[in-house]
Image (cartoon, rainbow, N blue to C red; front, side, top):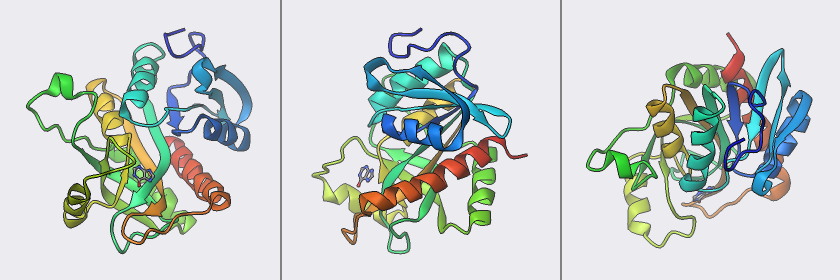
Amino acid sequence: MTIHIGAKPGDIAETVLMPGDPYRAKWAAETFLTDVKLVNEVRGMLGYTGMWNGNRVTIQGSGMGMPSLSIYVNELIRDYGAKQLIRIGSCGGMQDHVKVRDIILAMTSTSISTPSKGILREVNFAPCADWQLLERAAKAAREKGADTHIGGIYSSDVFYDERPDLNEQMVRHGILGVEMEAAELYTLAARHGCRALAVLTVSDHLLTGEALPSDERERGFADMVDIALKAAFDR
Ligand code: HPA
């Protein structure tokens, strides 16, 4: 047990999928895994461990934003031995050619700040995805026929953004979408010698104002889970 995770030693798999929403963790575990066991419910941040195609996997909610994700990822890596961590979440589209429902595989993540700023200080560290996970996710997405974009994203600290000028600069620099977690996930994975990737569905669009209705979010979410599992385990 750690401060925020009630799992017993050995309850957490080396591969962890991380949706922001704990109820998505429950849905994904019940939909995709067999032999599912609830391993964490501290603060309602549900985590499940089960089997997928003979591989052990944990699906653990991260909460929203980098400070929340940082707590769970630190404990998963340092106390439970997690080795590959894949965020599965939503993002806002930031380019005309990126459409609502499309998948984004985040090659890099730009941010103003992350919880790691305190140790990196004057350094503008470049958080990037694990190449092998990214390559396998790209293959899985291609085989599904999913409209997929691979490139840089923006991990923001705010959902209700009052600096349109910053978003303009992100759009100008080719950033595909905005979410709130990946930069810290990639930074922590780099620090601890782990592998990380963010697989995202475009749920809304900053340029068009379009948003995915809630019933369709589930379908997009299923595609992401499938791509993440194949990226983690297909050889
Ligand atoms: N901003 C930040 N995070 C998000 C968004 C957004 O527009 N959409 C989904 N996650």
